[in-house]
Image (tube, rainbow, N blue to C red; front, side, top):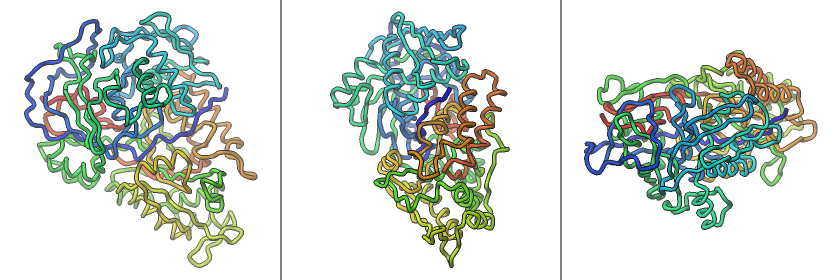
Length: 583
């Protein structure tokens, strides 16, 4: 069985920093939201809270790129849309597993290992419309119909899509083309957002787009949601969400979630700015405190901070191996096809200096797609090419490249030059500066082209760049959700063969494919780990990326904020925002 995946990078400088703003009067007064009729309540496993009638002010590094939860997008986008659209099963980030607090009241696996029967709870969308099985069918089909997206490829096995049907209004049958582990099936159910068919199709027609498409330009009143919040307003610098009054979760005392009536996202605040505001007490939580600021926060009894260890994120330098001359200059990117050249670049990369300069020393070098912070799945025996400038120069000599003065020349005496596409973000810019210095010492001339984030994202998806910086962020820790970045029709930006170069025809690629496909059907975590070990051992040496480092997940919140459950996967402090309240 061969599984087709698009190697889309849903990466965009992740770890989007979320901040809870300074709280004013937060007493539980005023009109209290109550559970609506014909809704089946579910008690989450959290501390009982109270409804907060002042806004919860948050911040994002850039802001969402769309309100459509089905398309590949940035972590900021996912942070917002996960508050708007619920899934059949919820995901507990602190425990790294799905649970039954989603739209499904029961999930039963049949004996064939392919079919799952889902009973829907009595729930309503934000406009009061009852949730029906046809909405689930619509959402899954809409996800599968977005060609080459992460979700569509996640729902495709051996070129066959998942079959989703509705035997009745409250029952959904999900049949996978092949038998897969129940753990993976449940993870998929915790990832696919559920949308209201009628309103979503109507909104798409209004905007002139295909069914299932919502955008930042979609009027807020047209966005009918299934999650804890709905959109109130949007501007260039702020997005405001208000509680979905038809939400189904309530604590054991009968208080309806989300506890905060309103959430305000300030946009375009970089990590450093947010961290500084948090340190001053102007903001109430940080999902990613900078290393330098974290050192100064110990002993402050007004805030609680934690180092959750190495995050799941991995910074990487993506090397473009497209052959489309309208998008790239092959004279600049031809070097990237050569393993020895990539290994030389890796050994010319001073990761320790990068961690000290960019992350304040709080991080670990990365040499593979799975972060060293992913304790269950990370494989330390995978091949690495650590910093060693002499070894880097030796690699270049072995592939017949020569250092002439201060310039590295290829076998036909052309200087090695390329441009690094870099989003205008302080962290990315700092990494770009260090890489430029490292590669200059190797004789490689790399200049930086800094562009606004929206433009960077566009170029990234179109493949219009020589090289670019990304910070890869998995949706969940399980490698099944890294699979789209590993096995697929396109390895990142590889379109096809160039002369003797075709990264998809090597034995290593076949071994990776077999290991990934086999892992999908293995129930034992230990056995699956062996399969993913093979992937990491083969993948890091061959793919045209230079993995750089993973920062530590440094998180914090204002003292007195209830239901905090810090974790090392984004968003580390506020992933369960619907449960947060002031004690």
